Image (cartoon, rainbow, N blue to C red; front, side):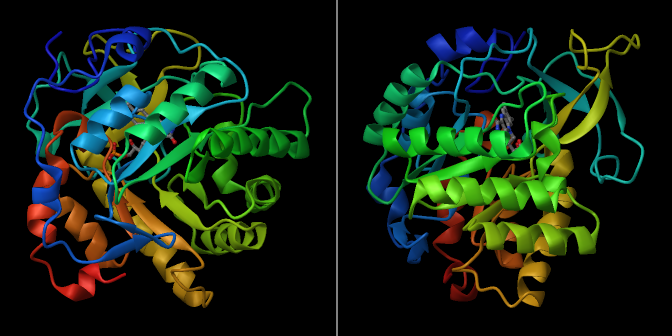
Length: 375
Ligand SMILES: Cc1cc2nc3c(=O)[nH]c(=O)nc-3n(C[C@H](O)[C@H](O)[C@H](O)COP(=O)(O)O)c2cc1C
């Protein structure tokens, strides 16, 4: 299959892990693309810009290095666990036919058809991804996180995404301890901030819907805060359409000691081939997460809800940082999020198919009004 992404969607996850990323272009001169940018700080550290890559596209230190060299300034290492977990069967990424209207969650799960390739124009490219949050064993990923930390440049930050693993018959407190242990190991390995994934729709075991439970959010955040000390803690959220629930979840996150919320994760949909066959093989994989162009309005609606909730609760941006994710395919998309008032913005699908997005964003960001940039 033809692919234009740094992650080759025609190869297995393990092949991409071992051989990737695929990139044969010229790297930008960082000093040049960072010149004239407005001052920006993230968790108190001076960064070159507020643009980052969320958890997922950067499988390991080789991917972190490439995207650091390309000028993305917040680099999130794909979610790891306290134990080795294999990946879902191939394929793991497929382009899909959909629209922003269809991907605004409203009750029934959208029914989508996959596309034969990823040749849609970037502004319209939407994909499904389904990996099941695989993890190398902790020693392997810890050594690799240390390499990733060594690969980033001045004015950049390494975040490591972690998830706890639900055990049969286990309690919420045990799950929280597993999240906390993963976070502590990530910190020891070199993470400057730790992100807890509360929202992966591609697992069936319960880790994927934690963001909808104020109790789970509060208990897990508190357990992680204890082990992380002063290291910033980001919680990765999915889409919520209920203001009261959002209020409760945000309050629980703050009480638990979280420093930031990143939203949104992918939005679940049923994906079939044009012949009507389940597109991704295996039990529980008719439904998988959608990301890219079509989820931008959902991502924006969610960050607006989070910003409004933060205001209503009287919480400052330094006490709760909000990071906008979802459908940032172009530089103007990233700026749109910043104009809503988010404190950071990240691109997953867009950065995979357009590695020059950071360079393009910085050209635009250097010219923006200080009301957008001075946060
Ligand atoms: C290939 C791929 C893998 C992903 N893996 C993870 C993951 O391991 N953990 C996580 O929290 N989110 C994961 N995500 C979700 C992204 O972090 C992001 O929330 C989502 O893709 C929406 O952003 P986008 O529209 O810019 O892609 C993944 C996304 C992609 C495209």
